[in-house]
Length: 411
Image 1 (cartoon, rainbow, N blue to C red):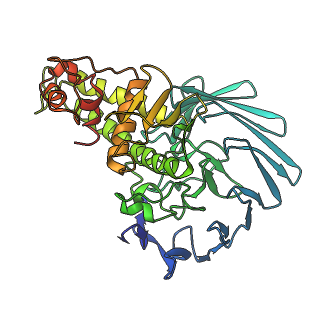
Image 2 (image 1 turned 45 degrees about the horizontal axis):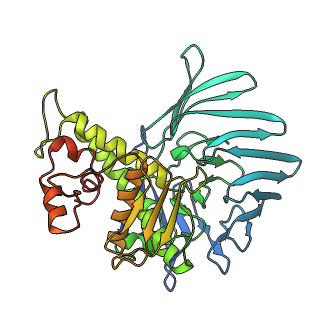
């Protein structure tokens, strides 16, 4: 049960058990911040303390320290070191040293624990295998990217994992890639999601959301909330376009807030299109006239645009700012890695318009174009001629038109 983004309790009935398990949450009335839990779930009876910047420093089990960048720097006698992309690359202390290596897009590629290396192998964004000491184990993930089974080279199942709604597991957790594809830290009992640490037992982050609140999303006022309290539908987007040239801090904050919210919407729209496509029989089409292949094509374009948004600049995707003449809201390099936002446009800073523009330009990065139709470039929001071109665009051209694809995100 929840009021706004404040989760008051969570009840679970485990398979094979008749007794329900409930955790209750207590909040500070002044700050609306979690201060403790109670109940018969794993969280048990615990109190929570914070530092002056809103980071959880004590959960009744572990005491933690943070630096001025809100990065956890020490806990349980261990120190944590980060790289320039805010990724934890070293854990040292108590006779134990571990190193971590990431790809440009932020995927964990290699971990080393006291000289023992584990290599992680991906197919696109999906973890499919890990190699440790010349032994390869195949990983099977669910739609959220959480590993649910491990098999050996003969296909025999070595282990299975079952997740509760917010990511806690029925089985004992392991110090490896876990819920939604993020590294689980056995020492802390937390998932390391790069931007912040996440506690799957209570369904809360341990630090404030680094992106400010969004005027069109009431859940964003919950500074520690995990994916709008809807973990079956969303995963936490820990990436975004990197900050390029021309930005003031104020305008970048507006852009950054918009692109983070957009990531959730594009991911949701893509999943919806795929679900619709799966429900169509051969030769069938939707009420809008789209075939299964049309829906799949648009979902694929959204996924590619989302990959650019989630790049965080590490793969070369950057957003630049520029004052442009005319009504152009932004530009994107076709098949490239940069977009440019017109920060002098009247609608820049309007969260909905900014999100639509970012999505449109990300689809140019994904390779989509909008050639003229009946003499005008087809834009959903443009001159009369452009809007008529958009409205009368043939169905086979709608599938590759950035504004039509973005209309699946913002109907």
